[in-house]
Length: 307
Image 1 (tube, helix red, strand yellow):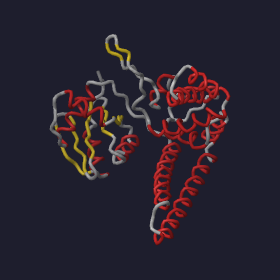
Image 2: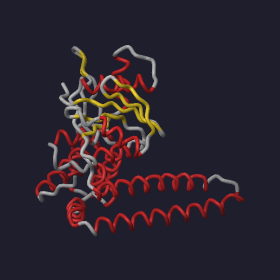
Image 3: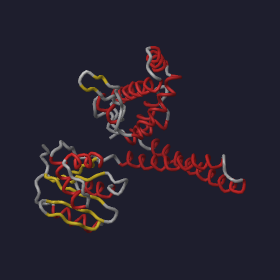
């Protein structure tokens, strides 16, 4: 059971529903109210704020807790909702959500979310923006193939704009990496592995910064490429990967495809799996795991810590 005193916080855009002790209050999501909340937690024994990921609105709360040495744990909202359903609860409101969030936290072995380094957080922000721009660029290029002739000039201007913005983001990332000795050395180490390009290296540094702090099974699970059993009685189901960090998984998928052609170790491994009748995607996922474990091994060998 969790040994912290749980302070459950349900986050909305402009407000917070806070369950602290027996008090269930709604406060404005502002610096003034957060400071007041900190005072309320002063008398609690080992307080830990527990909140759900909300697509970015939680960032201000996490930064406040980290800056004020308050333990905070960010949890997957799908887990909390599944827990609520298991309890037979179908109703949903901010006060109900706060209560259910605390019940969930009290029954789980939750660990405080570690604050990312300033450089890793900036790198993650830049990569998120890059992903938004590349998505928009792909959409514009698709439109250009089937649009009315009168629309092509506008779409071409948009394509040029997005390409320039992506180039600026890449320059900013390169500058960030070069100006940080720790990230620069880790980046070079990762890119020394055939198949691992700069995007994969950036992604691991930003979104899997604890790679050297966990064991190989844990890092594979964090990346969402651990095969889970699907057995029942005598039935042996097909193993499947699930959950994990999608951004890391996508980057590793592209890296594994490249490595399957140009990295002799990965190529031999993939060809061996295919020769044994494994489907191509199954072989590539296995290559992703092998590649990630190799990256982890190389970083640990050089005693790099990205977190």
